[in-house]
Length: 437
Image 1: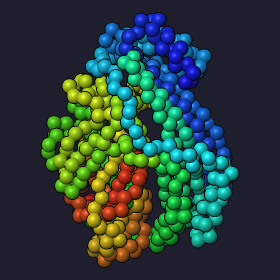
Image 2: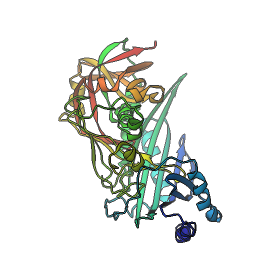
Image 3: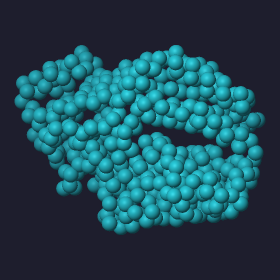
Image 4: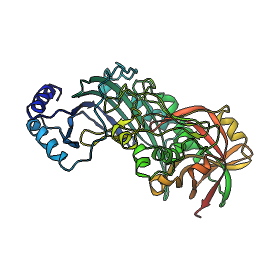
């Protein structure tokens, strides 16, 4: 695909298109997966594509292709799209893409399928040695991606990134009950702590064999980083500049107000080293920077792409994300919540009677745009007098994200990177817990 970029530029010049942007991406992945203790497959997938965006007669046109034989139709399709496109409220950036962040590591492309199979076999053997009746699924997903972005204002930027996503799932079937315990790790490097991940799965499965009961009511609830990530989707949506521009965000017109606990600070940081969502510039060529969204509980700003920023009379925050065939939109990279002072063990020790939630289900069933959540507890444990007693089943927690984040007892000093977020554990003072038994 990269070989066709000069030809596309020539076609644009011949068509008299003065304002254009070309995004080209090539990705290679070689996944290895296990399902229920057995090797399922070793794959090889190469994908590439070109997205063309033009501004013609003041309107935006978009076209894309992953077929090298259709390059000649790309300019024509973009022009046809511009007839009905949005009015452009921006100009393509001319500044050089001199942003820099470490996101490539040679250890990832050096990984062979055979080596990953050896690791997968070792993980399964280690888990089943301690919990023989658990069925184990493992996935390794190494990737290498190349990105080139150029535009009519003279911008021509390139970067290459690597990624290794690892997931381990233990499934315990007892009668009609199915328990799924998982752990994951995402990085640009080959640095997954496989032994620790396997041990966490074993510990959670072992602890879940003992069952406890918790009646409906309001209790202190400790969320693991995995569970916290489900709540913070609401904050990501609320700070999305496009939703703000449309007036759909509950945070519209609230800049400068305290919206959560004063100990909470949340940033979007695309410059974290060796994190898969990091990048030197966004998908419109704007140099990336750390953006503060909430500082000491006060709403400080939103995330914008060029078009959304233009509509609101402000500037892009370097937050544009897009697929090859999609228009850019404001997108989070790495959401970072600042940690606290206590260890997770200290947080558990301080609970007289409450709930520790490690995994949840059902965030998509909630009205997260307005901050409302209703989450099924997929893996939770009763805590009494500072001790974890046993797994609780058939529970749901519900409330409002912003109210919950204003009723925080403490945060852990440990952080985990989960689903593009670097998060501590959070102990909420009281949340409504509903038992379905």
